[in-house]
Image 1 (tube, helix red, strand yellow):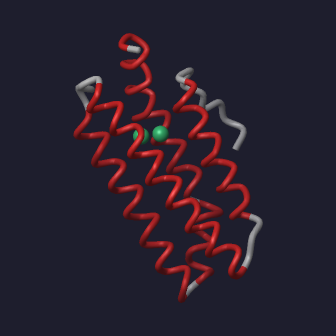
Image 2 (cartoon, rainbow, N blue to C red; image 1 turned 180 degrees about the vertical axis):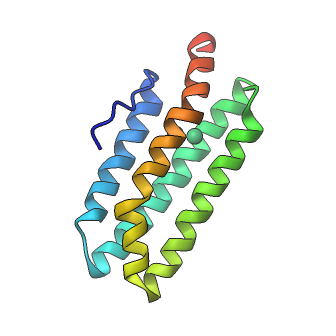
Length: 123
Ligand SMILES: [Fe+2]
Ligand SMILES: [Fe+2]
């Protein structure tokens, strides 16, 4: 997780750092701690996405629809694995350990970066 994911919009970068902190904690957790951290990650992600969506609406971001759909997909996937984690922790563990970081990294690099560039001219 040593990639530089900074977008140079402090409020966005701070949220992304928090997300990575939670993800690191889950990766080394087990049992009920795993499930409760997974819940924390979902709640954090809901707030994270809602915050970006408010910014997109406020500043009338041109690629809002595409970004919103990406958020929905990511959150849907996260919820799917969270539900799975109750019955099949191994399945959810592999999402957390092998998949979640890449997914988020790609979202930040491909999608959030467009928003950050746009916001730099508006804020
Ligand atoms: Fe983001
Ligand atoms: Fe985003």
